[in-house]
Length: 190
Ligand SMILES: Cc1cc2nc3c(=O)[nH]c(=O)nc-3n(C[C@H](O)[C@H](O)[C@H](O)COP(=O)(O)O)c2cc1C
Image 1: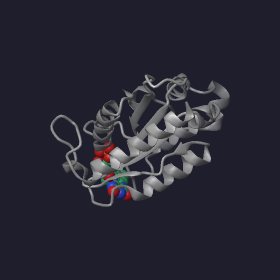
Image 2: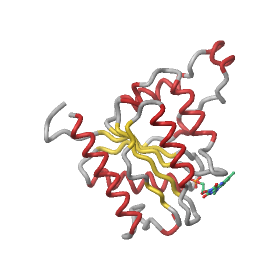
Image 3: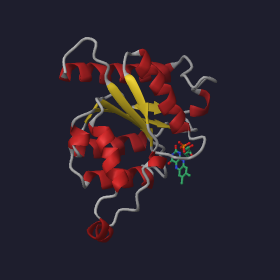
């Protein structure tokens, strides 16, 4: 679609379904920024897309879970996708890897069609740099375009105000750069 009035749809989710997740806080703050940039943020939770641990035997017997198909539809219909992932032992959490693995069994349009942005919130200062590299790798391997501002959000407990928006500072600036890069790429594709 090519119209200056077009409102891009951005699906956002966290790789953690923990109550009080700081990556969910990052998703919430990013949703505010996308709205300010003229997009329609659509927040989803992996808690609503439960999937068994991937096993080809299970798949042979049961096929791809309905939850996977439903998530894939959501992603395919989005102009952009933002994922905020925790870092567990230097890696992405099993929840997120499992979701990506299952979804890869349905094809690759949901990776190739939207523009992707990635972030990681951690309580410590290092900001999930290892998981960001992994997430970038796996998404690119599956055909996604991932904008090059990766949102490392270290010290995340001090990054958000009471309304769930970013406080002023370097992380907010980086987040705004990421949003601009995604919006520019989405516009370029129209
Ligand atoms: C099993 C486990 C491993 C962790 N490993 C790391 C790590 O490698 N790097 C890091 O910065 N934080 C690590 N953490 C701390 C997480 O960043 C922290 O628990 C964070 O709040 C998880 O994200 P969430 O709040 O979105 O659930 C680890 C936490 C757990 C439970």
